[in-house]
Every structure is written in C-alpha cells, then in structure tokens.
Length: 252
Image (cartoon, helix red, strand yellow):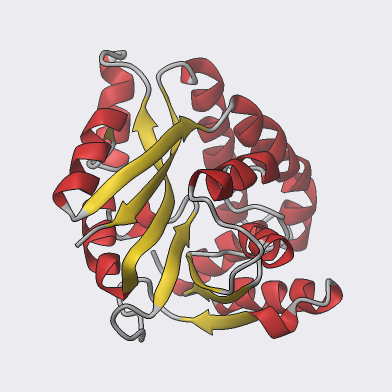
C-alpha cells in the first residue's frame, strides 16, 4: 500500500468515532470481567487506539494513567483534541508507535487493552510479545475476529483465510492464550449493533463527503466500493463471524 492510498484511508476513518466494531456497553463489560475498578491506580496501555473511543472511556471510568498507542499520527492528533475537550489530557499519554516496537519496560503495565487492532501483528504474536510488559497478575483485554460456528460457507472461509489466516474459533483463541501464559477470565461476542450501528452506519454516512473532498478521485471511489462490499459481506454472513472480546490474566 503506497503512502497516498494510505492517506486516503486515514482521511476516511479519522473522522469516525470508531475505526472498527465496538461499543461503550461492551467496553464496560470487558472492564467488569477484568474487575477493573476506579478505587485503585492503574497503568494501562491501549494498543491500536485509533482516535480513542476506548481510551477516553477507560480514562473517564478508571483511576488510570493510559498510554494510547497508534502508528498513525492523524489518529493520535484527533485523540489529543478529544482528550483536551473532555478534560482528560492529564490521564492520557499519546504515543505514535508501531505495536510491534513498543518502548515499554518489562512488567510496566497493569492492563494491556486492544480493541480491533491486534490482527495487524497477528493474535498469537501479539499476546505472546505483549505479555512481558504486564505485571504478574496483570490483565490482557483484546477483541479479535472470530468464527462463531464450526462450519461456514466455503467461499466465506476462503475470503477470510486470505484476509487474515489466523481467524479461528473462540476455543482455538483461548488455547493460544493458555499456551502463552494467560488464564482466560472471560469471552463474549460483540453484538451486531457494534458493527451495523456503531461502526458501519456512521462510515456509510460519511462516503459522499469523503468522495467530494477527494474531488471524485478514482482511488477514493474504489475505497468506498470496497467498504460497501465489506458491509454487505457482514450483513449476509454475520451469523458465522464477528469480533470476540477476550479477557485473560497473566500468570507466573
């Protein structure tokens, strides 16, 4: 992907509250499963934070210092503006950085949080490499694309295996966590409103303005058509795949 094409994708997505499926209720449910409470001070790393929907909710809900990491400077700038507007800047340290080259000390964090982003480096690699940054007994909270059934249409399977070879069922993901030195605490599937209402609907509403800003650039039109196909695919096959939210605790 060349820089100009990436810039178009960033321009489309940086104006969205979310850069992937999710919801405040679901983020709150994950916090409850990890037993994160406002009473005690926490150090949290939010990896692949985007424009900060989850980061800001964590900052509002907990007594925490949050390092918000994304490799796209445009997303981080939006997060900074939103944090300032909400009076949360003192609790959030934005960091432009690759999730594969985190400059953290070992056992520095109480919580590693990542919604809809770990696929960028792969689930197994992510949970294994991030473990060293967690304190003993620290929590990992990630959402990850997951098969919801043991069988699915062959064309759908071929599509997703080409897009993300690590797509698997929840039982397989939990085995990866256990093999990586975690005790699984909880798992749940994001409901379809996290996709259709919270993510896809605002994205669809933004398509006309995006194409107009880009003066009907052919690549912008191609991006919109690709997004529309992704939305149609989910609507047709949402019973077969979704995002699973995984909550696990580091042991040892």
